Figure 1 (cartoon, one colour):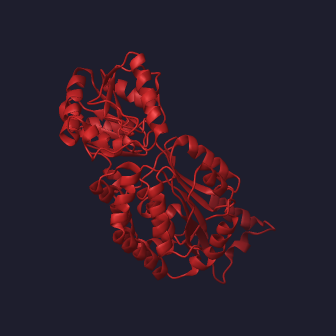
Figure 2 (spheres, one colour; figure 1 turned 90 degrees about the vertical axis):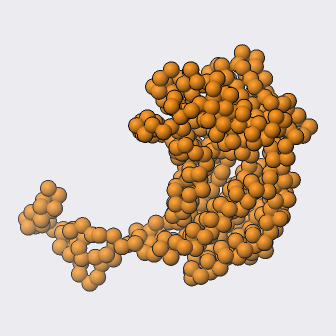
Figure 3 (spheres, rainbow, N blue to C red; figure 1 turned 180 degrees about the vertical axis):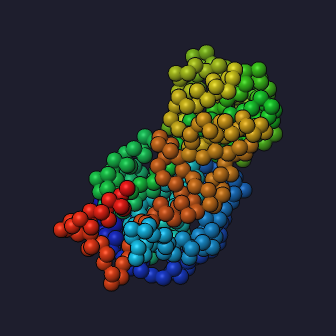
Length: 464
């Protein structure tokens, strides 16, 4: 795309949308199969792009970028006919004779704005569901991962005509220009602050939105789980992508007496996975930009100045955009690491004397994107589930709710609007069109004016 207004590109997508919607399901299947084949063929290019942008290890790329796209495509191919079938609904007595149906039709033209932290996964997985629903699509990958954005543009150009799927590369000004167009649906993944701006832009045309955002995602640790074991597990989860994950543990709640054991386990876990100096480990991902590195350092300095305790295995290095895994405890409630989504390898650890204290802390803030429970006590776990609200929850594991192709993924309120994955993703890009059919008989007209006594009696019988 070269037009700064993107009007011509939008009109091409809009013009093709009615034709694409009428094509048989075999067209959608063929496009998705071609996307899958091209992505697998270009696997070495995918690896190179993510090394260039984030220093992501190849195994990490396969598991967290390529595999979610492949699984989503395979799941759609297996279920598309069922999802697109017209649903027949039972009729209440008052609507007999007749037939009630739900038709699942494309919304039209969709814009997908994706982030830099999982640049291929979070761009192409929504694309899969947009295509499954029969839409035309514009992709806006993040400019902070330029090698990945270029990879996506090349991949898409090899599979799709530009009036079916196109890619808009560029900075925030490009995103702003794109949002000037009257999209039928906008799918945005990013921060709540930017998400509110996307929603405001969509409101001008009453476009529907899916917002996958984030927030302070807590980890509850039960006293009988094993604090050291919990610390080691959280170290792995927090180390993924150097904590630059919307569903990463943002902070941990542990029983007061077990905090030191948790800290010990976390330190041991980091050394097990990355050695005593993660800065020398090629599997440790770098921070995406100097601006993000500076924010993490500023928040860490604020914690130190406020009296919090800090542990790091080695020193941060701005020149290399290296930020080490970092533990913080005894942090005041008002500082940034306590109040804001961290999106980096800093982990605040807070303690609780009783479960009511832990619940009160979580429920005092916005609803998180994910809530993790580390517990083998079912009644305790069920209480956490019952007395909290979150976009998703994982018990004794991390991230895997995202990997299940049928579980709805998304936030609630501040952490997101709408759901994706599986039939939920298909429905997000579809309009559920209600249809009522009636034949030659028209009994409704028997209840039309003038309202004779027998009409009044029938209506009274119906409503009471």
